[in-house]
Every structure is written in C-alpha cells, then in structure tokens.
Image (cartoon, rainbow, N blue to C red; front, side):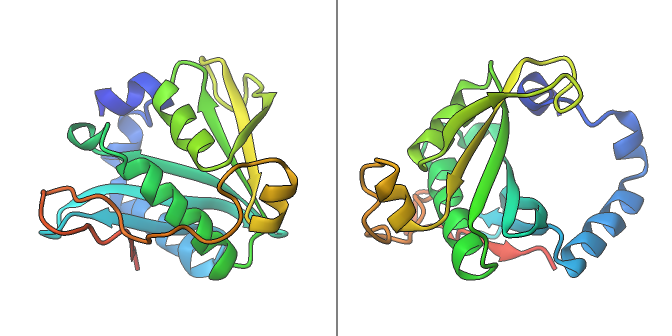
Length: 178
C-alpha cells in the first residue's frame, strides 16, 4: 500500500475497510462495460498486477495500472500496457487512450512513452489531488501513430509475449477479472 501511495495516491483506510463493497462496484462497472479490468498473472497463477481501462465511453478510455513492487524494472508493465492498448483497439473498439501520471512517477512515464503515449496537458488539482501531474494520450490505430511520427508504429508488435515473472517461459498477460 505504501509503495503505491508514494506515486499514485493512497485510496485511504475507508477503501480497505469496505473492500467488499468496492469490489461489488468494480464488478458492476466491468459488467456494464464502462470499465474493463484485467489481471497480470505469474506463471504460477500469482496476481502480479492489474491493467485497466476506466471511464470507457465514446471510443475513449483512461488507462490505469499497478504492478507489484518486486516485479518492477523487468519490462512487465511496458509489455502488459502494450497488450492493453491492443485489446482496447481490437476487443473494445476504442480509438483514444488517456493516462494521468504524477510528475514524480518516472517509471509510469517511461511505460507510457514506450507505448506511444504523448504528454499533452497538466492535470488539475481535482484530477490528482496533492500531486503535480500530466495527462498522456495516444490513438490505438497503428496508421494514426505512424502519421503522428511514432517509430515502430507500422504494425502489430513482433511478439505478444510478456517477459517472464518467475523465470520460466513467458507470463500470461491477462485474465479478465470476471
């Protein structure tokens, strides 16, 4: 909890005290299609992170993700975000993705820029209270990315596989939460 609170904000004690109620709300949002929640699983089935599409409407969504602290620095967040962007286009027919990132969260900024997101405007104090932040965005269409000048945007990635968490083979990138 402290690890995430340092970069993306703490959900507060009330969230954890009433987690079952929060989980019920999450499942309802997923079922309604206004949010799409995915899990990153290790080779052994351990939950290693979550990668989500939030506030899905009119062909756009906000990207949100968390990765276990002991798994950072291995390219997992970059690979899983790449997969999420492709799912956004192919499975959910989204054309634009946005992400809100604290200015101090350099790791998430790198993940997003490696996935062709560009920084485009400062966040308001209401959007991320207590932390200076910026919005990043990207189109999901490869042709649009190429027109925007992004390298390596000419087609699907060469590999759909995520680097391994446990050191064996590859890691299954997503399993739907529900």
